[in-house]
Image (cartoon, rainbow, N blue to C red; front, side, top):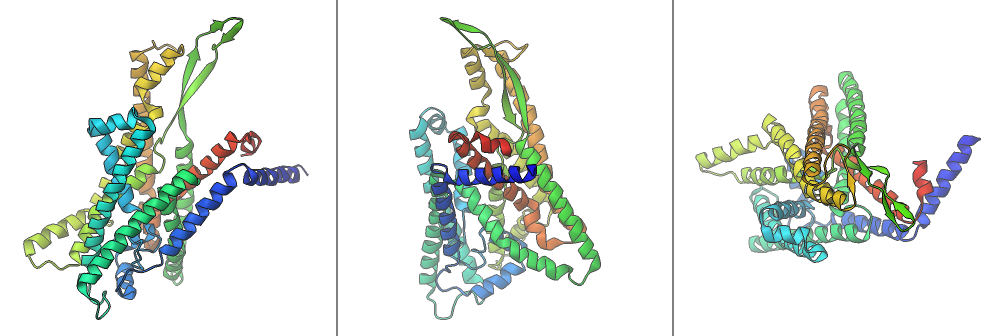
Length: 447
């Protein structure tokens, strides 16, 4: 009876959340944009023979991996074949430039909304340039691929049409991602990647079923792999939600007849402050040279020395090499620290100044610089633990696929699992935050 009452309360709370002011419209808008993205991802570019490229993609791990992140758009050689990649890469470049260039750093930290819009506009320009560059490389690789171009297609029209279509498609994806971020629920870029991965799961399941159907050992390996995946999901959730709470004491202040302060609180510092973004950024950085090298190899360069250099670089960035995963691990750790350094709520000096301003302090630590140094020490240790844990978790499914021999899940296991769980948690947390703002604390207490 009690269980039925609790379930009725959950249903009532869910209905209340759907009727919450603005939330229903935001969710409908988000799903509508995602549906539009999925529809446009099926539209092919001019003059291409999809079957030839799909045959190449099925036997190429890199192209198959990229195809999964584009939701099948790359395999279909659609106008959205480049996906959200150019936009993410441009965002990384701008965040790095904001640390190096004083004017951009000032715009980011001091100019408020105007500075944010300035950086966002520069990011968009970078996205167009990068998308144009990648589209030309992609068009050249397609042109060199035997049978990929339909008979009778003019080469000039093919290059111009492909460059314009792919660049425009990348810009449209960027625009859709920004629309979701501003008017919908969740981070637009992360959700588009999330949807792309989800769209590729049925194909991976079908390949896996075909692989293990006639082999009992592989069936046992599949069970072990699923168990490892489930355990990894638990670790990802723990890492995502874990936080280091720094105790704070406030001095009592009397204003008139009222007494303020005197309460003990804490500042929570997340173990993984960047969430899923370090993974996405690491993938974007790794996939750019791997994509270029993969397509260059398809061009069959005649110069032996140049071809040898490209071949060695391709091995370094190959998803089957140890060097790839070493670089991937280092990038995750580095980008986690970088992302933590640019989050406004994780700046030791600013936190120390605010604590001093409001008469608060860490127990046993003097206000001002000593507090900033202590916070910096805590943040460094916390971020290091989170970065190493995130890197290790990213490696576990990859090692598991190698050990069990179920390589059909290799793409989704290595990186996509973390992205799926991380984006899903961020999406749920944003819904909870929106509901909290609308005074639905009762629903949150049920979670």
